[in-house]
Length: 163
Image (tube, rainbow, N blue to C red; front, top):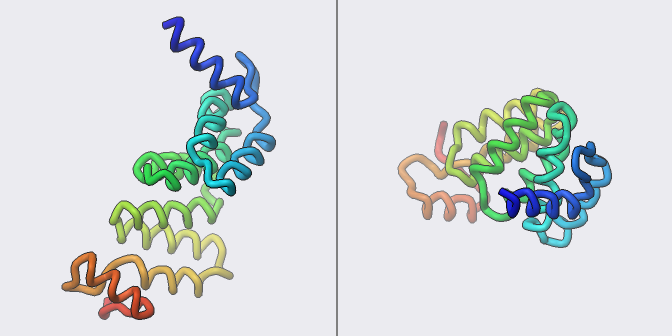
């Protein structure tokens, strides 16, 4: 127990969160963006996770979003999806969370869920509806094609069979 508490305290100090302190969300989000841009997602998770645990739930959406991006970059798609669903629960009108969830669902092979997330993003931000339609075309392979067939179809410009 003492070792776990020491590890948690060390992680919290790395994240800029003192024992019992409320994390500085804007600073931590900024730091995580720097780490993600530098392609250091594991370090971003190390910075963000203690802050997520320390922050009041209603204030943790931006931290959860950044952590979900970091997990996605590490191919931890299921964990990323769970965090993105929490972000959407906290901030339902955050269109970017829906867009990222669509990407994660696509990585998980959940085309129907990805399409639903894209549709929600387009509803929230009508100005991206055309882009969303283009993204839908790349979500799943044409009917009757395996995964390789889908990759070949996308390689030819994203053509698909009729819906």
